[in-house]
Image (cartoon, rainbow, N blue to C red; front, side, top):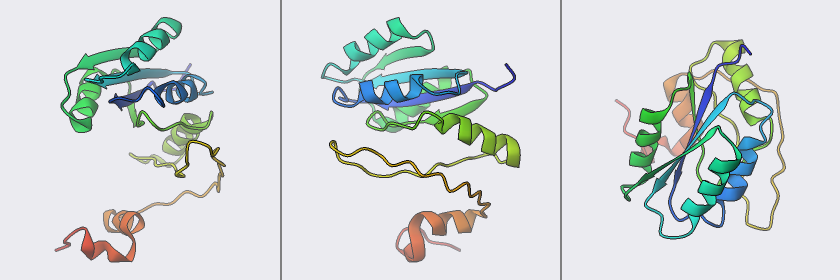
Amino acid sequence: MNEKKISVIIPMYNSEKYIAKCLDSIISQNYENLEIIVVNDGSKDSSKEICEEYVKKDSRIRLINTENRGAGSARNTGLDASTGEIIGFIDSDDYICNDFYERLYNMLETTGADIAIGRFERVSEQDEINFQNSGEIKEHTNLEQLMDLYGENLDDYIIVY
């Protein structure tokens, strides 16, 4: 297998309603060279126990338990523990289509880019995501990327000198 290992880092806090769906979507990826690091940021619900069951089922999953310090600290803990050549972040209440990492990996390999970003849709608990692949690859300068993220009201968010 020539594919690089991707470390998927999932910061988790009180996610018992969502974490199983999140993990199911990651372990069913057709890109299999994954390391899945769940950082339990001091959850008070049954999130930890749910993840412990997944650790037993899939050797790619690691669970790191920490005291509650926030999502940023949990992401950094995951980064410190990662061994992959590529890093991916997924929130514990998100789920992805089964070719998500394959597409992002192929974009990185094809373009030589340092970062690949996928589109997302917000959904309610009852809705299913309709994944659409435009096949479009965009290159941005830093300012263009910020405009893409924040729109024409960039000045409301960021001061550009």
